[in-house]
Image: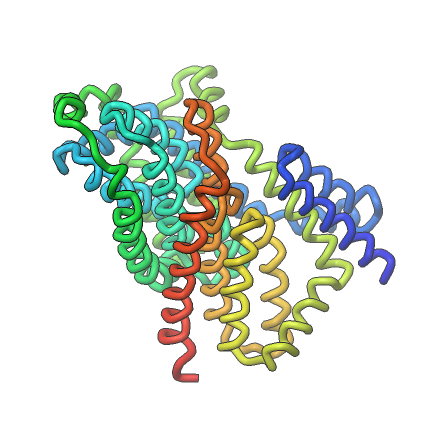
Length: 430
């Protein structure tokens, strides 16, 4: 068994190193790592499949399909241009309003989908204003990760945590995480404006040209928009009541997605187009990671780490929560938060089995640390990499170092705020 554990750890570390190096596509690496666990006999096929969290995968696929269809209506471009005109197309307020819109969309949709929709809009606005897009792109990344922290469906780590811990409902995430996310967003916007104020300047000619845009022209299919908003509304209501209805969140999301396809996709090609918009590399990345982590669980490595963590903290819920929060934040800054959370979930479950009774502060600490930690570097979260990729396609490359110089200090400050929130709300009375 010890040899199997060392083999599993070796496969895990090599896979992680290759993901961090970005020399090979992370989806290919994750799938090969998961397959290696099966091929080397560390886990058998049935055990590997048992460890795949199909609730997480289903929720992601369902939301991606709904947002892809809704995006065809032009509603997201409409909102961005409408909001820009409401603040007279001035660069500084536009940065604030884009941050708020991105955070809100990330909370209600998910941050990966949100940045896919917001980056083209943001580049259009900055080109019209003839200003550098970098402050806006960095703001999109940071606000998407903060907004995604607030809800169950906002960020992949939260989806994974909610799927693993059934008691943590959609409403529970909002009740426990939205207040601190809102406070962090407010502080972050103020600091970003202060940092970039000299770059947030345009001339009157470009500002007036943007003001003359007619946002209503962006709404290309009003009938489709009504159907999309109706189904999205029902789906969000389903998330709010999914526990009372005894439904998994993935069942709600997939039901919404395929009802919307039934209402809108009149041809085979329309269905194919909607399914093509699903980020299949992300889905297979998750799948590979679940199998990869199963090797650590089945060989007892996760249990050993949990016992060590209990020993270090003395089983104290307060110390355990702080350890998880800061470890998650620092690690997620330099390792994509999805594989990190996939590793941490069984570890925290084992800590509960070993004697920590009050588990909620630990789960909220993991969610806050992983989501906020994603702002620490350009490789910290999937949304970051997507923004960087889309910007590079338009000849606006985002520098790893420049993002690190802005994102890492802001991430540390956000975690300090989260630390105080976790302690005051959950731990000060213990």
